[in-house]
Image: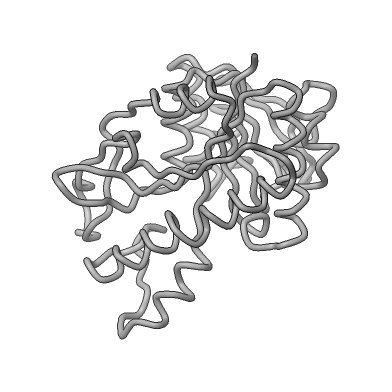
Length: 258
C-alpha cells in the first residue's frame, strides 16, 4: 500500500466546494487502498476567532506571534473546529476518518523556537513519533492531523507545512503533496516546471527564476528528499479526479521534486 501525506492550505482550506471535492478524492483513494494522512492549517479561521479577543493578530517573518491567550484560541480552532469539520466531511463521503493533533500520542514533540524575535508559544518540531498514524492506518482509519504540538508540558503552535513535511519524512511516505493556491514552480515565462531535482533547483535559484517564498519551499523539499522522501508535489487544486490521477501517477499538473 502506498503511503500518502497531503498538506492542504490556501483557498482549498476555506472554500466549501473545493473542500467537498477534496474529501471525495481522499475517500476514493482510501477505498483504493492508499494510506492517506491529511495535515491542515487554518489561518483564516484562526484570525476570525482571534478577532473575538482583545488582541490583534501579529506576524513576524510569516509566523504568528502566539501569546498564551492566542495559543488557546489557535488550539481550539485547529484541533477543534477545523479538524472536526474535515473529519465530518470525510465521514460524509464514506471515509473512515479520525482527527488527531500533534499532542495525541506525542506525535509531534516540539521545543520553543530559538533565534530571532521571540514569537511566544511558537515551536519547532524536535521529534516525530508516527506510531499513532501507522496504527490508525493499520486499523483502516484516515488520520486528519492538526499541527498543534506538545513539549515541556505545554502546547506549541507549529507551522503546518513544517509539521506535514516532518510527518512525511518520519513515515517515509511514497508521496507528499503540498496543495494550496500555488500551481507549482514557474519558469521566467510563467510556465509550469513539471519536474525538478537538486541541481535544477540550485540553478533556478541562482538565476532568479525561483524567488521569494518559493525558495524555502523547494529547499525544504530537497532536504526532505535527502532524508528519504520519495516524491514531493507542489500543486494547486483542480478537481477530485485530477488529484487522484496525480497520486496514481497517471498525470502531473504541478511540480514534482525527486
